[in-house]
Image: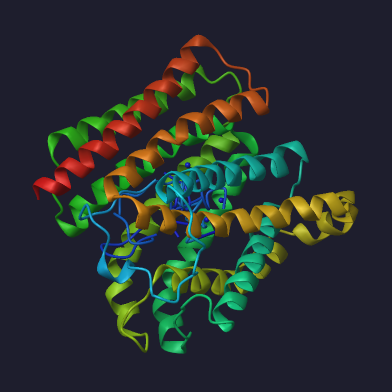
Amino acid sequence: MASRIPPLAISVESDASPRKNTSEAATSPLVNGEKSIFQDQVRGYSVLGSPLRREVGNRSITRSFCIDDADLEDGKVPKDRDRPSHFLSLPKIQNQALVSGLAYCISSCSMILVNKYILSGYGFGAGIFLMLYQNIVSVTIVSTLSLSGVIPTEPLTWKLIKVWLPVNIIFVGMLITSMFSLKYINVAMLTILKNVANVITASGETYFFKKQHDRQVWISLTLMIISAIAGGITDLSFHAVGYTWQILNCFLTASYSLTLRHVMDSAKQATKSGNLNELSMVLLNNILSVPLGIILVLGFNEVDYLLETPLLRMPMFWIVITSSGILGLAISFTSMWFLHQTSATTYSLVGSLNKIPLSIAGILLFKVRTSMENSFSILFGLLAGVFFASAKLRNNSHS
């Protein structure tokens, strides 16, 4: 609500992210708030990746970064995700697994909370412009690092752009709907509702790709649906507009994951090296999102609002929205770092457990009115997400 690094879905399972999204190279994540909230999110993880990370992270986003939690489809890190020898030479750090895990958790939680603060705290009414600005921040940073030789990215070609454009259109829709829903829905409920994207994605995998899931996976998905319905019924701050945008976001998040899985092989063939790493997807998604974002800002008439709002004349506001773009990108880098230091199982479970402190922080920081019934529904949904992650990993290991 995906740096949006997509997917980021990354993903809140985000989202994001957010925020993971293909058979071999999906990233969650919102994602940007969903960049994270999903990234969830297409970064080398399972198609059933966390929506929060995808958007959010996926923004990461997924955006790429939607990205936002995702588990690895095969229960291991794909070879093409191994870090190149020249990739971000980091200084020696003691206990890198712990440090990288904390960095990933903090960046993914912060992405969604900052986006929520911008949209609800400041009352910023131009969600599409926020997405566009975060895209520009991500493109600037990734391009600078790529040109300086710090990170590897694939050259963009017209052939690759044509293959990727349908995915990017869905990606932009995922990020925008994530922004719109985040404005009206509290963070804890948003996290639970994003679980519905997992249900749609699993159903799509079974229908389109004939992928079989075991009983425990379907039980956990059923529990997610029950918690989402119970949470909506008991939500004291229920907002029909926000829930409508979030339902649409779940369908777009699932569509993004399934479409990405479908076109990934073609996208790899369209590159000069025959491979498409996560950073290249981040750059590609964000570059293509800029012209689409400009068109949508004009189409939704956000220009008049931007010209009138006093927020754009506040230096602190620019610092905050710039930090949101940087956090979206940070989700991608920290998730890759964490994954390289641990295992797919640890990464997936930490992503699911990370939604618990995120939900608590969202309730406390934004003084959300809640009830015992609603709190129980949220906790039930969070535990269902953890059960889903463990069940999916067991299913993959048995396969």
